[in-house]
Image (cartoon, rainbow, N blue to C red):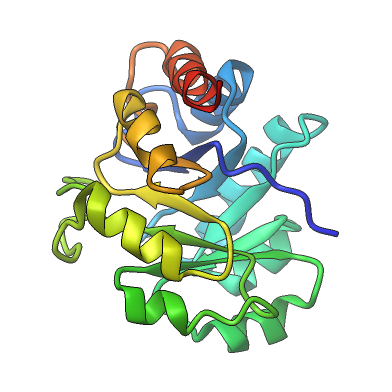
Length: 211
């Protein structure tokens, strides 16, 4: 049984994290309550991804927080990451599942109700739904869906969902009200003066929304 908590899903961005680095950002964020860490670096090759991923695995060791690798299945396997996340234009989810086996977590990005309905729960463990808002960290993103769109897509998805795309701590309540299990953040933690405090604030908002 795969157990993971989508509440405070940190997506690492190498540019935003440059000042203190991705490993230190992840360490501090987990200290503050981040529940999942994703390594996303669109400019790194597999060798670089493995190097960064191993540093992340080292800081996450013993925390129980899973490391998810974006797109790069080879890197994820080499790192011994807990999971992989793929987009619609990346590797097909079923092919990714075949490569990583049954035990690793597999996430998939979905932007529409139709894509959500097509998700096979025997292949995919969770979906990332968005963008909720426009976001500078992913310039090529699709049209923002807002919280109404989020609610419709969550309802169509047969697996748990995390909201992504320009979401900050103050959006935790509306995202959970729309049915998401948590929020995936980039700039709300990466590049913040105190990643631990930033993560703590998000975790607090999630807790409040669940109370």
